[in-house]
Amino acid sequence: MVSGPSGVGKSTVVNALAERYPFYFSVSATTRRPRPGETEGIEYYFVDTDEFVRLRDGGELLEWAEYSGNFYGTPREPVLDRIAAGDDVLLDIEVMGAVQVKASFPDALMLFLTPPTIEALEERLRSRGDTPPEDIARRLVIARWQLEVAEERFDHIVVNDSVEDAVKRILRILKAPHTKADR
Ligand code: ADP
Ligand code: 5GP
Image (tube, rainbow, N blue to C red; front, side, top):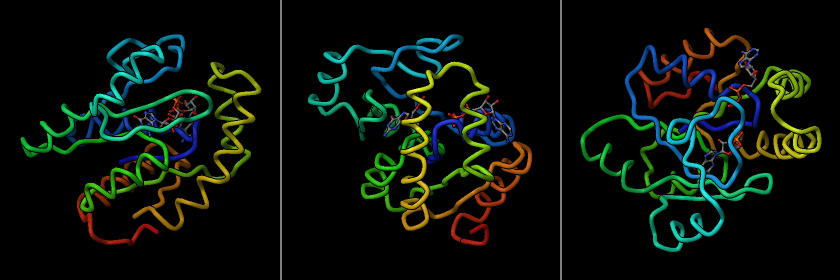
């Protein structure tokens, strides 16, 4: 599982990692509206609240959380199918969802991507240009709290200073999943 504050570069790093390491990327359901460039079924399944509640209450989500005013959840079946097939599965989910998954799958590796500084994080969120200022402010408040939780709950904290270095660090961890050398 890869988690980390909004704007730290999770999507960027996960996409770069995909070229170097084979895994199934779990596509989440969300009630958030698509950003420009996002495609149904690639980044997310974009659903309305009624549909999300139906999925959640029907037991079709492995975990779910509310984040910055929207719901997000991991479809259960594709993840369990891929695990049964012996594939590595990657979830890009926020901190509380990651903690829920770890409770069900104690062997799951929890990686937390962290920015070099909070200022760098703010700059990345702004530079992406697709998040309204009030949502940026909300996401920065959540980020400070997440950084504290991550210190306690995650297996590895990986700094995303440059994408290339972050990918290299993650590859090293994946090759030796039971060490905490990167912390
Ligand atoms: P997340 O998925 O964590 O919300 P994104 O992958 O969308 O974050 O990245 C947020 C912004 O930061 C994007 O504009 C991206 O190009 C930029 N970014 C990602 N990684 C880095 C990095 N290592 N250094 C500088 N900018 C980065
Ligand atoms: P964004 O709106 O920037 O795409 O995502 C906001 C946050 O929701 C990110 O931290 C992302 O990792 C998280 N997220 C995406 N999908 C899921 C999910 O299925 N479950 C949970 N718990 N969090 C998710």
